[in-house]
Amino acid sequence: MEHSPELLISQYEAEKKKLQKLITNCVKEMEYLEAHYHSRALSRLNQRLRTLYKLTDNLYEKKEYAQRNIRFYEKLLKDKKLVYAKEYFEECLHKSKEQLEKLKLQPVSKPIQQDPDLFQQVLEKLLANSIKDLKLILNKQQNIHLNITYSRKTLKVTIPHIKKLLEKHVWNEFQIHDLLKSGFESDHNGTKLTLILKAEKQEILSRLHYIIGKIVFEIFDFRDFANESYLHYNEVRSQT
Image (cartoon, rainbow, N blue to C red; front, side, top):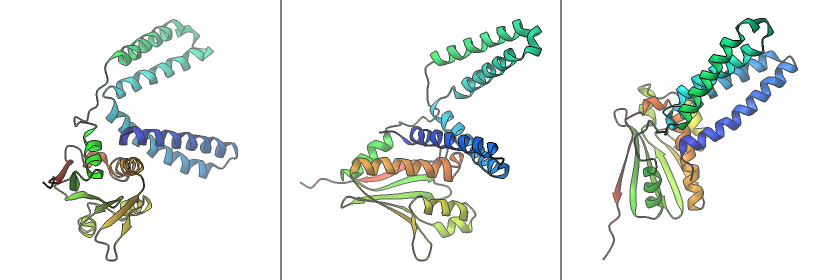
C-alpha cells in the first residue's frame, strides 16, 4: 500500500511529463499564450513536488543543489567559448558529483516523525470494525477535522463546520470547489461536505489515502497542518 506522499509524487510526476510535452508542442505551434498557462501550472506542480520530496527525504534539498551544480558545469563544459576555464569546470563538476554520491550513501529519514504506518493500521481497524468514530484532526485550533465511519461495506468521510470555516476565512470557495471536484458532496444548507466510498476494502484504503493526500498537500497548504494533526477514535468493546 502506497502512502499519501509517495502516491501523490507518482501522480504529479506523470502530470509533470504531460505538461512539459504540452508546453513543447505549444511553442512549436507558436501558441505562446497557451504555453504560458501550462508553464504556470507546471510551476505550481513543481512547488507541490518540492514539498512532497522534502517530506520523504531530509536530504532532498542538498541532493537537488548538487544535481543543479552538475547540470550547470556540464553545460559550461559544452560551451567552446569557455574552453579556457575547462580545467576549473571539470574540477567543480567532479566535486559536485562526489558530493551527490556521498549524499546518496547517507541514510534517508523522513522529517515527519509520526509512525508512517499508524494511519494505515487505524484505517484497517476501522474497516475490521475494531474501532469506531474515527476522527482525523488536521488543525485543532481551527477546528478542522474529518469524521470517518465505516458500515455495510461503505466508508463515509465528513468535513463539518464548512460555513464557519468560510466565514472565518480559514478556507475559501476555491478550496471548497476543489473538494467537490475530488468527490465530496455538500448538504442542502452547505454546513458539511461528505464523501462516500463503496468498494473492496483495499480499494477503499487506496482511494482514501489519495484523497486525504490531495486535501493536505494540494488543496490546502501542508504547513497549516504541521504538528497539529492527530487521530482520535473509540475502541469497540467485544461482547462476552
